[in-house]
Image (tube, rainbow, N blue to C red; front, top):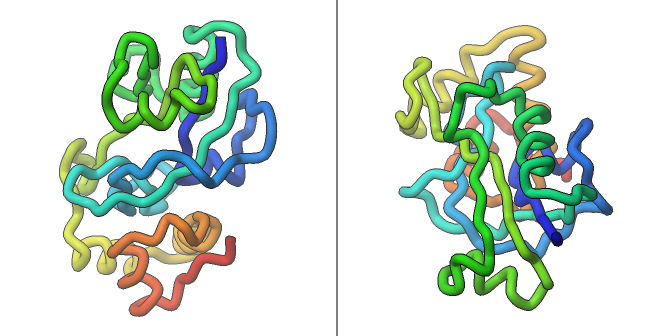
Length: 179
């Protein structure tokens, strides 16, 4: 089974134990991504955000033999607790013959697509999207190692993930992509 993982954040530069088969490809489908999730490490991470414009994401084949193995590897990499059912998104291409993801997958001999499906989060409220003002105030208020970690995240996120929040963060804080 040919399984791919989509990526738009730290998976790209730090896959850890996620069994990627090669370097990441930058010609993935276009998805609505924004810097909209205050992650456990303090960074303002990227997440699927339904009011964001689409950007092209990255993808990589996984060196796994089953969909369950691939999902578990992603769950472990993202430190998503077992009890959480919404943390990993899955699309079986054969059972979804229409739609953006299945159309993208058809020409690549892909059987299944997985991705991190954690929602935006601010103030520990899942699904809440920070305004750009809240995001800037949050980032500007960080100090020490947490601030450096947050800055590194934004600077390591590939340039092609050019979002409205990213442009304002670069203009206001000077944090620009180095990738």
